[in-house]
Image (tube, rainbow, N blue to C red):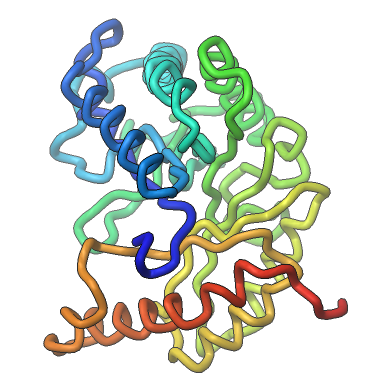
Length: 292
C-alpha cells in the first residue's frame, strides 16, 4: 500500500476477535494489533482503526446479541478502552472510527437483530439500539458517541475520533441513519461519509457530501467505482477536491498486475481503481488550488 502511494490505511477490527466476554480480551489479537501499528510506523503509514465490526454474522457471540442496549454499549466501551490502550502508545495512529455505518432505528426492531441487511456475504451495517422508545434518534446517536468516546479518552487523550456514516445520514433525506451530521459534529474531530457515485444519478452523492459540510473536515472514508464507469468515477473524484479533506478506498492485498490476469466485473473495477489511485495519488495529496 505504501508503494501504491497510500498514507492512511483503514483497518476493520472485528468485535469477536478482540473481546471474549464482557470483561475479558483476546490477548493474542491485541498483540497482533500492536505488531500492526509497529509495522505501520516502520513503513510510514497511519492507521484508521474502525471498530466493533460484526461483518460475519455467524461469528457474533450469542452473549453479545443477547445484551440489553446498556450492556451492549458497556461491552463496546470496553472494546474501545482496550484498543485505545494499545493505540495511545503508537505514533502511527490516525483515528478511531467508532463503528462502520451505525444506525439508530426509526422504530422498535421486533426481530431483535442488531445487524442490517447482508451485502456480498457480509453485514456492514449495525444498529446501536433495538428500541429508541420516546427518545429522538439524534439523542441516541449523541449519547452513544459520548459513551464510547469517554472510554477512549480514559486511555488516549489525543487521537482523533470519528464515525463512518452512510451517505443517507442527512435529516429529511427519506431513509436516514439517525446520525445527522449537524447534530453530532461537535462530538467528533472530523466527519466521515461513505460515497459511491451512480451512473443514473451522478448528482446525488455530491448533494449528500455538501450536506456534510457543517463546520469540520469531511473525509470520504469509502469510495469505489461500484455503480459507475471509471470515467464517471474520475469526474466525481475531481469534483470532490476542495470539498473533501481526504479519501480512502479499498485494497485487498494484491497488486494491480494480479487483476490484469483475471476476468469479471470485480477484477476490472478493482484494477481501474488501483490504477487511478496510483496515478492520481500525488494530485489528491497536494493542496487544492481551485476556486469554489
